[in-house]
Image (cartoon, rainbow, N blue to C red):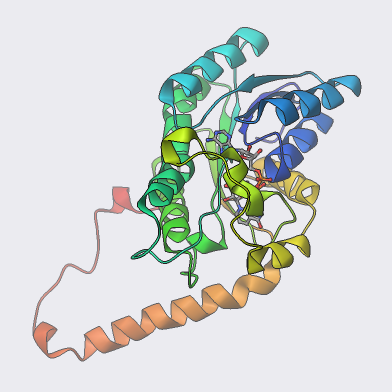
Length: 290
Ligand SMILES: NC(=O)c1ccc[n+]([C@@H]2O[C@H](COP(=O)([O-])OP(=O)(O)OC[C@H]3O[C@@H](n4cnc5c(N)ncnc54)[C@H](O)[C@@H]3O)[C@@H](O)[C@H]2O)c1
């Protein structure tokens, strides 16, 4: 999307952190923005602050784990601004723990928010974006934890790899459409994610203070300001950039993973079970992203 002025964006998790950074950057670029979040107080406060600066913004409270909430938010966006061009599936929570021992309610919570929240966003908004023919963009927030397995974060990693998988699939499906697709993979960003349990719904155990000061909180506090990420996402939408990495010094983590993947092929080349087998070497070309 080269020209964003006057276009309409919908952002989840917009009351805090990177979602708020995106809402600010989009509004400053002349876009109309619907801010959406589960936390009603900060949502209203941040929306009012943007309105006070003269920006054309509105807000809707939603829980991204509820499809009816997402559908109501989509309706409110179109009723308020006429149409919608940009979807940012950004709301997310952090759950730490090993896959095999993490409390199952927390496992379900992180999957419901970080994965189902994205799926519901896509189902409610992408048909609306495609319906007007003016083009648009979808960006979903994954993480470096969607690129590389991180010790002690199995459930979170599972959801963030899933988001990368969905968005890579949509890149392949939209090679010839006017719908741009991006996946945001932030490194450390100074947001409120280390207090995610403030928003835990009753179905998953209810709100609670962070159980202990996570080591990650100190690292994140040193991270980028979320407004920088908001500006970066805007630039990526304009440039139609598929992968948005916020910390170029983390490139070596991905290079190292790729070396481990290639070592898997090196092993397969000499694996006794495969010796002499004839294989296709490809998938159907229309299923590939390049
Ligand atoms: N902060 C980092 O370093 C970092 C790194 C990689 C990825 N991320 C991802 O960035 C995204 C944004 O998180 P952040 O770091 O800005 O944290 P944040 O806590 O500051 O913001 C997240 C927002 O999501 C909202 N939210 C939580 N559950 C919700 C629900 N069920 N429905 C609607 N809104 C809900 C919260 O109220 C909050 O406003 C998340 O997807 C997170 O996983 C963060």
